[in-house]
Amino acid sequence: MLLQKTLSKSNKTDLYLDLVELTSGLLLVGFLWTHMLFVATILISQDTFNKLSEFLDTYYLSYIGIPFIIVIALFHFVIAGRRIPTRIQEQRIVWRHAKMLRHTDTWTWVFQTITGMAILVLGGIHVWMITTGWPIRAINSAERMESFWWFYLVLLIVGEYHAGFGIYRQFVKWGWFPRKPIGYISKVITAIILVLGLAAMVVFVQLGGTL
Amino acid sequence: MADRELTFEIFRYNPQKPETKPYLQTYKLKETTGMTVFVALNMIREEQDPSLMFDFVCRAAICGSCAMIINGRPRLACKTLTKTLPAKIKLFPLPVFKLIGDLSVDTGTWFRHLSLKTESWIHTSKTFDPKAQEERMDNKTALEIYEAERCIECGCCIAGCATANIREDFLGAAGINRVARFMVDPRDERTPEQYFEVVGSEEGAFGCMGLMACDDNCPMELPLQMQLAFVRRKIAKIGLGVKEKKGVKLA
Image 1 (cartoon, rainbow over the protein chains, first blue to last red):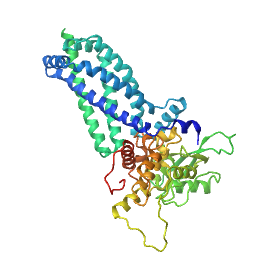
Image 2 (cartoon, rainbow over the protein chains, first blue to last red; image 1 turned 180 degrees about the vertical axis):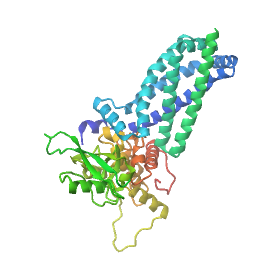
Image 3 (tube, rainbow over the protein chains, first blue to last red; image 1 turned 90 degrees about the horizontal axis):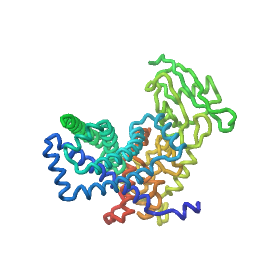
Image 4 (cartoon, rainbow over the protein chains, first blue to last red; image 1 turned 90 degrees about the vertical axis):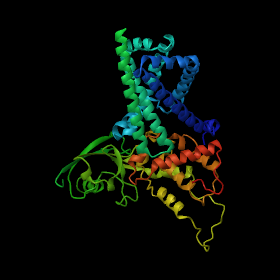
């Protein structure tokens, strides 16, 4: 019995933190996949893309949605991030452990934490670029994409990686479905979203070139 | 296959002799048919180096003593055939557990602590009557309990777990599986709140990050993912005050 641990023990905190991690993660995955589907409307036509963006503006959905997602993302960063080993010795143990074990899910988790950090920085820049270049129209996006396609390529890959494996891991932890099919389904969805994202990028860059 | 020469690189360190730093020692051995790592270790100890320390009792994957890191993965030496391995075999003791020397670790103290912490015994108000007929249990429940009880406490799930490697107080798959076993047992009279007290924290159900190295490395192939998830869901329900249907035990 240690005094400091006994006094600081809170019965339900760990449960609530776990649930916040789960809920914020699911919301963010839902957001990201919707976001990418919206972006992919450029594959249909510029007009569809613009109309959708105007629609989101008219009904204030962007103005509610963006701050909401920023708050959720920050919560997710702090609360899911509590799992990341912070002491140097712990870091050494985890890296050594992952190299020794050569276990896929252990490695994907190591990259999960790295992509999480990357998203915090790159996502922050992305939000800044979008909000300062408001509104979102096909032409603006095409200009941005033509200049910074490499930035968006990295963000797309790390974002989809983090979302795909994140949702897989939550399903594994809560055991609602068997592990193998969930792994397969999350990979297929991630692949589809990646293809859509890449295709949208190509269209945007071409559009940017014609400007 | 049977005429391969195997090269064993074995971790050597004796905490009693800290002046000799840990090192890898190489042994060469001719492979024989049906050879396991356990057989090879015994041959090395008999023919080449009597000072080599490693644990074994049953040599039949029942006692769980001979768990070690074989080529990076936690395995039972007695259940690992050398023919499934490359000619170069690296052996390390299990991490997390106290090192006794070379490949030998003390899993006993760790598992005793686990038993005490999870109070791994039937909590009942009934007095045992040796003359009474044994209480009946339906077959499904008995099988569920048996499935969890197949754990031989070898420690492979703990050694493979990244969380257990960095958080000393984490119960790991073996611990949570143990709690699952009591949760489905109708003879155990612990209330849901008492179970929450035992594993409703990051030391228990919520400490698992879902890396599943336990599930992938369990020599007994226990359904650890489902056991961990089962306890996580039940404990979350208890914590949130979701009532289970009347007359149904936690399962």
